[in-house]
Amino acid sequence: MNTQSKSEQQKRARDPWKKRIFELVLFAMLGSLMFCSKIIMEVLPNIHLLGMFVISFTLVFRAKALIPIYVNVFLVGLYGGFNLWWMPYLYIWTILWAIAMLIPKRTPRWLLCVICPIICSLHGFLYGILYAPAQALLFGLSFEEAIVWIASGAVFDILHGVGNFFAGLLIVPLVMLMNKMLKKSGFYS
Image 1: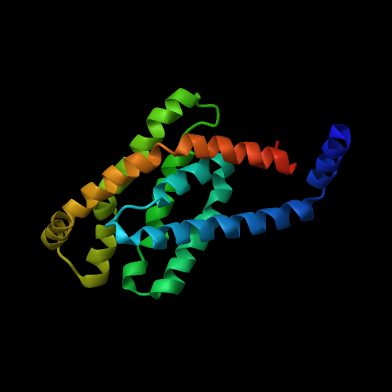
Image 2 (image 1 turned 90 degrees about the horizontal axis):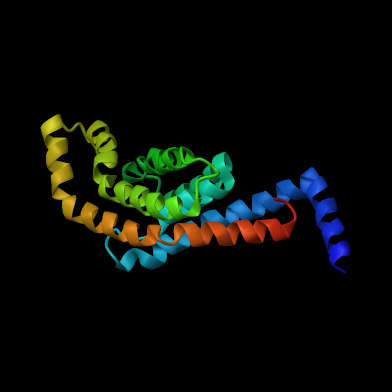
């Protein structure tokens, strides 16, 4: 029976359309999971799992991780309105994705356990600074006004960074689980 299921998995993996449909459904679900997790955790100020998901998906899917990331961004806009506050979402998560892309594929697990929470945490601490250029451009803020805007949200950025650190501790177990499940699917080896 094991041989039969293995040959079925190999046959499934050979059909490119099946893999594309599998990825389409998978990435839509992962983007929706990101969005739902954010909505559920809105009771906590600036504490969510998005950074953890962005880094995890990037470590597993590399460049294709942009698909669920932007499914989430689109759903956030659809839910909250495609307004000026939403515009920075178009680049803020891409910055975290790009940083996670710099992590080599064969990084030892123990090192990932150290690096990932730090990167996730730094993104949370720097969120206001990353958001500030859009605020300045969209609302005509001077450099000094942008600094004041950043300083006024510093408490929330501190909460964001601390929350992201603890969420970042979940990255390596999630990556291991996802890799195991994808390998079982027969579409990824």
